[in-house]
Image 1 (cartoon, rainbow, N blue to C red):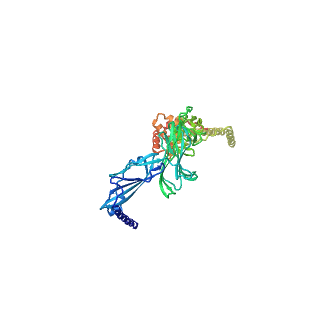
Image 2: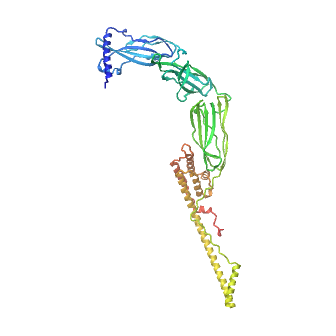
Length: 598
């Protein structure tokens, strides 16, 4: 859709074309076959720009559509390949003029380039070509950058600062680059340093601040880099340039500029001969610490704890920190995690952290030993070797608490009542009763006969009671033996159910439930921990592997205690494959019941 403003522009363009064609139909400003090239100045400073104009001519097919879409026409440009060798092209524009001579339409195109010289000295704009037209070279004199003064402060300039003039190989060097500017914030690109024999990283983001220069308050864009030289000798710090547009309030326009900092260098020293460490670590500060997930003063057999070793270094990249040699712990099973290295911004440069976590499982009762950890590093502030140390440590592992045995159902032993035998007092009482009976009858023969009857009755009663007691005890002994024989499989079944539940529900006491089940499964084995269980079933490689995979997943920091279902089921398969104890085996381990329990 063509707007009203667009129509007005088209009408003005047509009017200009008609007038231009009428005026230019009588004369031309250049010779045939020569490309006209001009510059606005031929003496420039290194940090300034100048304007180059190239005027070319080409045939043009006049139509209303071409006027509306003139910018979209495929018009060739002059060859400026040689021009780029000595100058940076900061900006480019195009202007068009159309004229008609004897009915032949031609387009006169003006290319405008804003150029920035790359080096001080005498150079030239090379001969340029456009179709069959060729220009003549133009000499250009490039002067050193103009020195700024308080009377004429620069609108923008670049400054660099190093925190040291000499350093050891791999020691941190801080480079600060500042872009000073007056008025509005410039738009452009600030060059980053590059080195062949050094690692360089930008430290954080750009920071906006203020500084006084040339009696002016400048806005400053500050950028910091950390440099880690990898080779001794001289490290050259290149000049860094800013190329972009700035607001020139004196001339009330935006213009392009190129500003360059002063180069510098740092002397890099080799590793000092007096350093005795295995890995060269130059840093501002180093700290070595250890942390425990739980207290280790009261470890018991089967307990697990996570030990985290952390090395913090200021002025050192994380990639320069080697893997720590933490030694071999005795009396403990270890499950180390992959180390983690991180680097963060610090007021003194870069701060790196090396973290290594290891899950430790107390296997056997007794003493455990953790060896010393020692790291040698070079203090670059005081120029001396120092040691970061975690001392060795001895741990005492107590025996695992005896797991309570589940009660055997219906295991009730009845205690028979002990019969009360008649003593002398009772006999006396019986005689007294007989005498009373005799006294009642008054017949001596009847008295003797009655006495024997009473004695026979008492004897028979005692014999019957004794026989009943013996029969009861024999029967009760048989019931007790049957109850004991049935208790072992029932205890085994209940402990198995508890073990399977703990494993599948990922309960924290799953390993303890495995130990309880193993005690029921192998009563003669004296299993009190997972370590005892592994030793008892040492020939069962599949079971041992399943237990170790489960422990590894349980104590792994990455899984955070989340054991996969596949690992759990693999362990359950191996455990259930061990079978169940026989009744005879379980009974033989128990003492026989006493005939007369106390």
